[in-house]
Length: 170
Image 1: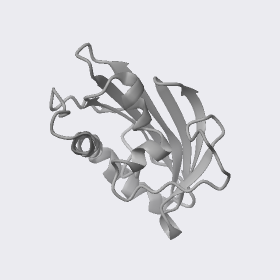
Image 2 (image 1 turned 180 degrees about the vertical axis):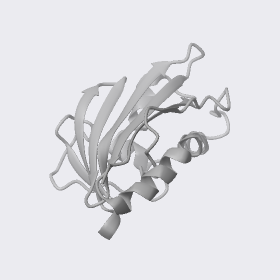
Image 3 (image 1 turned 120 degrees about the horizontal axis):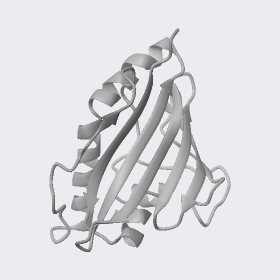
């Protein structure tokens, strides 16, 4: 089996300054705006974005184990993630000021299928990555309320470094 492997990068607008926007991409912060996102922490933690923090999402065959591997507070966080028997990789979120009081958020998924069965869903994810990030932008704007809508729609610039990546999950 030649594993499907993808690096996907895109951007979204968040109508908050970087320090505030960053918190929306931590495990507990994402829970505020992402329907169905329910991180479970096997060990108590007061800082859910501290390097070394472990948490799980999903259930049964679609359970994903996450580890915070790197963080620059209010600027960048990287996660390693494994969905046993399906896919593994990293997710990196970088937050920058947009010059208008808000933030531009760059999200990069690097994923590899672990099995032949994991290739098709990964490929589908890769194909829909721009829509995936647009849904994040819409959900975050809804969470922030009517005065905090994205200023520039269509800022997504997906970048595919491999031809073989597909459907991924948060």
